[in-house]
Image (cartoon, rainbow, N blue to C red):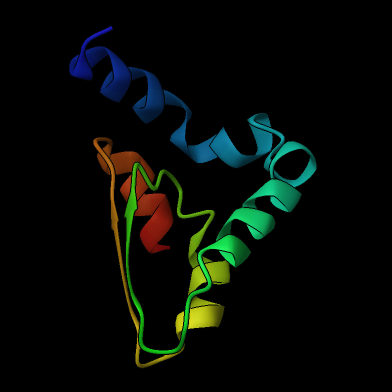
Length: 85
């Protein structure tokens, strides 16, 4: 699968990704545990690669606080637009 194929696929489903992916049911607990394992502190800098819709953002921002920095990158502009929202 090429980058273009990935971009096409995720561009089409960006608006419904979290619901269709059953994020709240399948991944929420594991996401929390994983972010806890990072032991982030206020002021930490975080790079979220393949951030998708930004599902990690709220949990990360809670830990790094206003003095921290969070940067998300993704190959799909539509997913990044959802993450920004």
